[in-house]
Image (cartoon, rainbow, N blue to C red; front, side, top):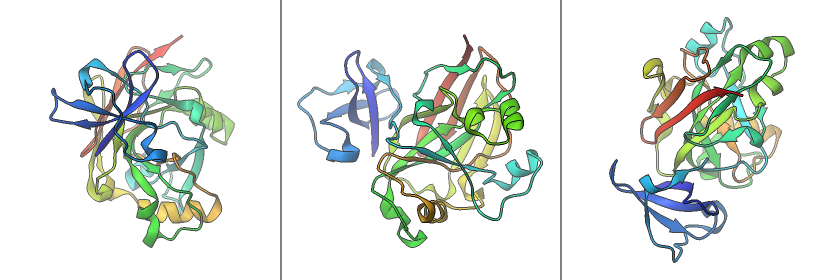
Length: 259
């Protein structure tokens, strides 16, 4: 089931997206289904083409991202895969939605894209074993873990390089019925394929990531996990467009600008 967050020019709303490409219809819901369930509203259905899609979730507390979780990406970055998941945070103020501009930050000249599968948490999650991790997952969406590489090198820690405003596009919706074990993931830059991998190439799978994280800190409903990126990351300039496509979910497209 595809659950979108959208606007028709008024307050944001949630709805279920149904239908084939080109003819998708959104059935509106009452409130945020993450908290109140799938409750249809009295509003009339709307065509997907007539709405503006928003980030499908705004994390209530945090985005937890994983570095070097694909061996080929670790190699291209000049390092080995860590023995344990390499975790870092992105703030919820970094989140933007489909087709929103990603603003290249002043002071950085080396910003890159990273297409990733994102996991949305649905329950308070603490001390959960991998065996029960699936019970804590609301669904899956697409992320672009935009990174200022020069800041990353200079700072040593990644808060600024990974957390600047607009550095975490999410979308186009949350897919709640998906097997994430072996999905194709592809990133294009101005239509040219730059990343092409499969989620089965992750070093640390989603269940083990949730176990590892929840042993250290509590995950809250709406928190988002970025699961790492395949090889092929590269720099992006103002005016260029990046699209991340994940099998079974759809596409996330954003244009990069400088202000």
